[in-house]
Length: 142
Image (cartoon, rainbow, N blue to C red; front, side, top):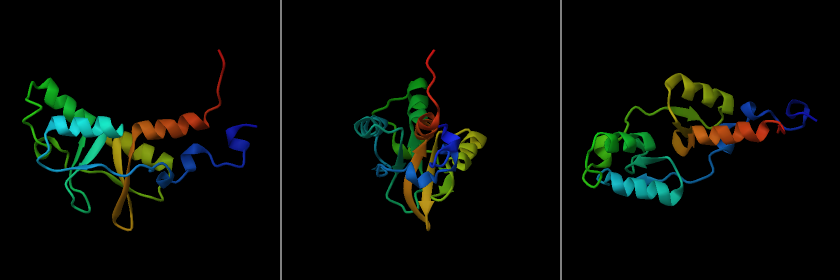
């Protein structure tokens, strides 16, 4: 039986809130890049929300940290507020995986914030979406 003929919906039609399982990790605006990296490693994630604002206004991702390192800046001195992205991209919790994947590709981003009734309920990464799509793919043996 193929994925399209099974009783389960195709991966792309699954609501995105089924992918947001882990709690959102937050760091203080004064946290250093080293502290942010440690939080990402401890929680095995690629982005953290900066501050306790609801809705959030800033996000630091792995890419932001790489930019700091590549520029030769002192990771123990650079603060979250100095490197955080403030142009956040959101989706509704009821959006489908396909809709979110398309929005991420259109904006060339790897993380999108998920909201329900105006409240942050999670962050979805490109890696999360890849996991959904790969679970739906039929395995081939070569």
